Length: 274
Image 1 (tube, one colour):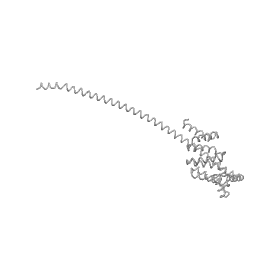
Image 2: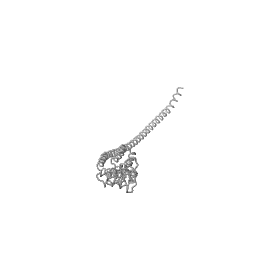
Image 3: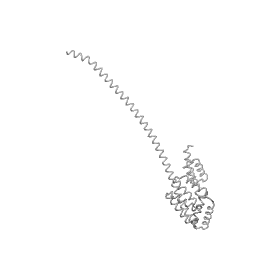
Image 4: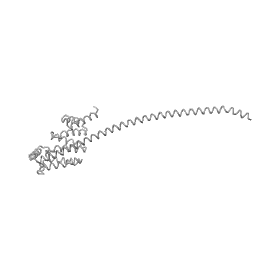
């Protein structure tokens, strides 16, 4: 009996040893497969990290570009507001001086009345017929320097306060009543500005062009021509705008308007890539 058991165990041991060897081989194979999977997973993670880094760099570049654009717009707005404040200050001082000079000069008053009468007979419905009718209805109002100055001041205060709708109404009323007043060119200019500020570019363009047509020698002519170019740009009249801005630089060299026109032309050139 004991011999039989021993014999059975001898026969079973090689099979057990073989099973153990196979199990160990399987375990090694599994470990190798796991290691390979880890290597592949690690490579995939590295690739993902590289892709993420590239995306982050791209986004950083876009952010920097947007920051640059915002800074450029901010600088532009600050320059425009500073220039507008300076113009308003100069105009306010000049308007007060003009009103005082007209009030102390009877001959200038008489000349203004005569000029208004001449304009009334010119046949221009926008600048002659309506002002003549109002002058007739108001008696001597058209020749009253104090009344003219007061009307202008109302409009001027409105645009300075940012009340562009009221300002456009008041400046138009001033132009209708005093079409040939010394402040009429300024009124046309600020009328255009009031429409430009409210993005009513077609009417703004007409106002600036009206100033240039009626008062080509005005101190506001350079600024008006510049704003003609700006309005044309807003209306997508790019070719005409470029020609207008070039005209500003040629006609008014050394002026602030010419400097702004040149700056805008350079920006347009950069945008077009030409």
